[in-house]
Image 1 (cartoon, helix red, strand yellow):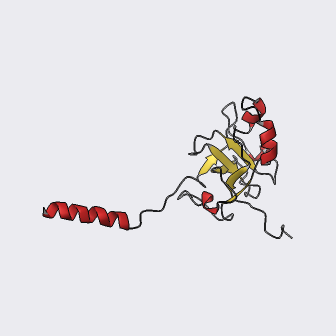
Image 2 (tube, rainbow, N blue to C red):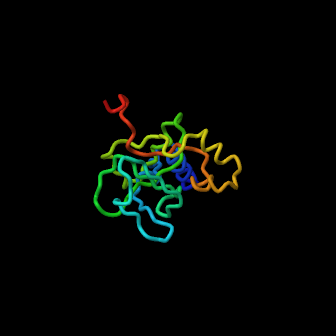
Length: 154
């Protein structure tokens, strides 16, 4: 009987104590891979633009993002894992990986591809090849660093 009471007390205490924070893989490092299997190099990118890749096997949600302000290393293009988000839900981008580097600012929900209205037009037929170019996702919003300053940078 004592064991049963002790077990029940332990189970009850475990439900009351705060657990470990929920983490995801947002911010985990990832690489950009070409269709032929080669690695995308920084020299192949246009500076000052966000880059998003769908299908990244290093990422839980298969989305890899390189923000437009990422510092150049002169070698392969590296990004961070991301996830779809809603701009109305600030908690969507809080599940950071322990490996996330926040030196380029916080991860925020912001548009990285075409706006939602344009995506809807392109993807009105889910079999549209244009829709598959953007991963078949009907959202422009992803968790990423490099958001513009509130004053527009002036």
